[in-house]
Image (cartoon, rainbow, N blue to C red; front, side, top):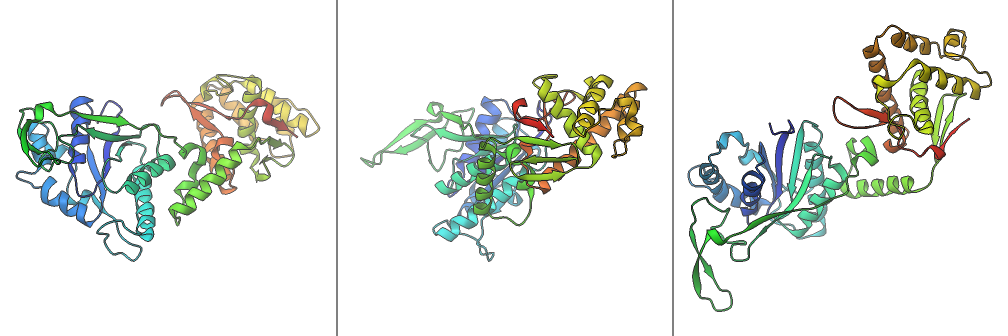
Length: 392
């Protein structure tokens, strides 16, 4: 694994010029000193034939040659015919090229599906290259990365100096320079140029990651690209509106912009706990580590909830509560006895359940309990300004 501990996947879209695969691989491994564990390629029938015939030739193919030139064991990079995703029509016919409106729609659906699958495993990181294939393939790959891309994923375009761009014999800059014949398209005359003069650059493409904003709705099956774009736009418009998050302490419900969800008393208490932290500015802008939550925090929140119901109770009176809050006492006992791990496990379990309940009621994840910080020191909170949280 790399320094991130994640499996590194290079994902490319290609057409008849598979050179972009090894050119991108060259920059990542030799210039940036990154390691690639797997290469995946999305292409048409003609593109697949070009990759198999030229790039993947086991004896003298550029991929094997590249690994040999730079002392890389080719077995450490998964790249073979099974790594090629061939674009097809809706009825299963292999696409020779992308020419029609239907071809474009089919390509969009498949490219997004592939990116979705590759980004489901959080132990991986995807580096997507939009340099090859039809322009629409690069556009759809960019759109897919916007929908599904995570913080660890990247997007780029490879740039090659003019004399070597699309040259049929140029796949990367070899450690020992080679002379290639370059033909002047104006005069038709050929000249010999050394690969030592070649330059390859990887232009990183910043992109907006919508995955966290849109939540798990993108993981649902049975969708098409155009439908998902429409759904994403609806969610963004919902987020753009100024919505008040209302916590109904009587029926254990949360409402946002007309969308309502009822929670169990325990889930409501957990959600209300972090909503309370946001309102008082506890922790880092309302985001708190479960390890830092105290008995005083639980007592203060319990008083707020019961006061909103018409009677203010202290934490030690939870057993007298007839509305289903007896569990609060058991949570408090974890803190009193020093069983912090058990307390944290309860919170994380509740947060996961709240997330699913919000998703089922089409409330964007933005209004739920989200995380910040690195692994091992996560902070939890609600990313809603305190002035937009109301109790009733």
